[in-house]
Amino acid sequence: MTDSASRNVVRLRGDGIGPEIADAVELVLDAAGADIAWQDYPAGEKAIAEFGEPLPQSTIDAIKEAGVALKSPIATPIGTGFRSVNVQLRKALDLYANYRPVRSIPGVHGRFENVDLIVIRENTEGLYSGLEHEITPGVVTSLKVSTRAASMRIAEFAFSLAERAGRKKISAVHKANILKLSDGLALQCYREVAAQHPEIAYEERIIDATAMALVLKPEQFDVLVMENLYGDIISDLCAGLIGGLGLAPSGNYGENVAVFEAVHGTAPDIAGQGIANPTALLLSAVEMLEYIGKRTISQQVRDATLKTLSDGKCRTADLGGKASTMEFAEAIASNIK
Image (cartoon, rainbow, N blue to C red; front, side, top):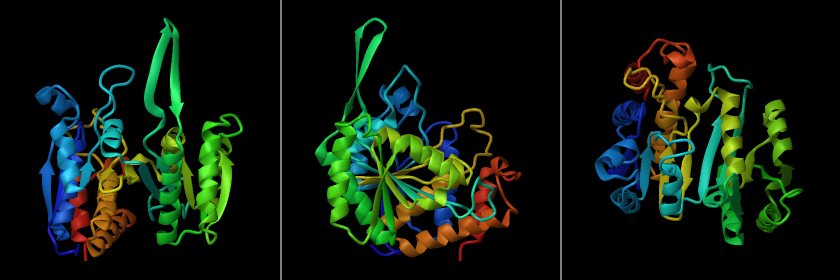
């Protein structure tokens, strides 16, 4: 696909601040000439109200047909209620790889400068398989599922990505000192794939030691690959290194489909006020543009976003400014060259 070709993209506008930041992203991409034909489909609270379920089959089918989707945050009840739409999407579309680039943004205060790393998370199994059982009142078991097929697939994804991106090192994150069978199996697979890529340095790190090392010296990391639960935790930790989830993009990849999303919450306390920061969803859209072959426009939108943030003249309240969501989007649009 060329930058000039029109492309259908399914959009899940989400809950809370989701629709507001979706509109801001649309404004910026229109200004860049991305030529995206948005196809809006329901998911989350509105889908329950209309269809009685948070993720209708029609939404899943539409994403399969389009091959790509952009998702605003969707509410997930804690402890009760419906199962996470995120988890359902990953299962239904076999989005086995979660990609979370974490890069410092010039002019935006973070714990560190010059952070530039990528977290790759296996997306389909582990404890997130959701296999729980109450044996007797007050006693619950949760089953962690680990397979060779999934471990090999995520390892191959990580090493292939590192190769394409010119990355030099992969850190395999695990707890095989305790979980000798499940994490041990994953390490076996990582080692097999690492042997096929001798040009990329490979190391293994225990999850708790990795968390400490990241908050002490993140520059020692390049690409990190790990199972589902570890990746969920570590990717959020890494976002904290650069200023928070509001600045961190995310993509979920399958064989023939990808869903890009902002991973922060729905922020119901500010929903409808027009003050939400759309940066995370916008940078996720940048990754989406790259994925669908609109690379020139992707770079233009990325550059304009970073310039706007770096200038500091127009920022939303969470970054110390006074701009509304759409004022911030308009400032980015004016910086597109």
